[in-house]
Length: 70
Image (cartoon, rainbow, N blue to C red):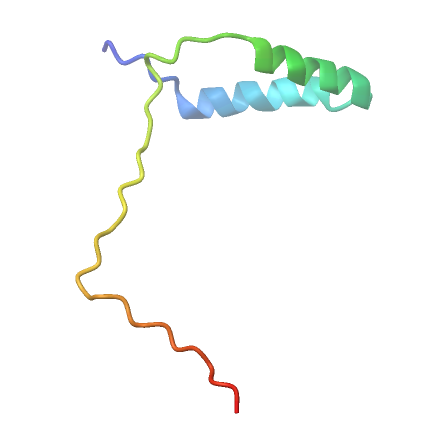
């Protein structure tokens, strides 16, 4: 099909299997594993991104009312 998007269910299953292997280790080993994952380079070309587009308001914002001290 030419679509390189991974199957979501398969990716979740693989992630769960990896986590089940890792979660029994001690904190130092887990920290090392996380550091290795963070240092692993991967191709960003095929990753889809979602961009936030702020909504434009049609109504002007209301003025701020400040309290008056007596």
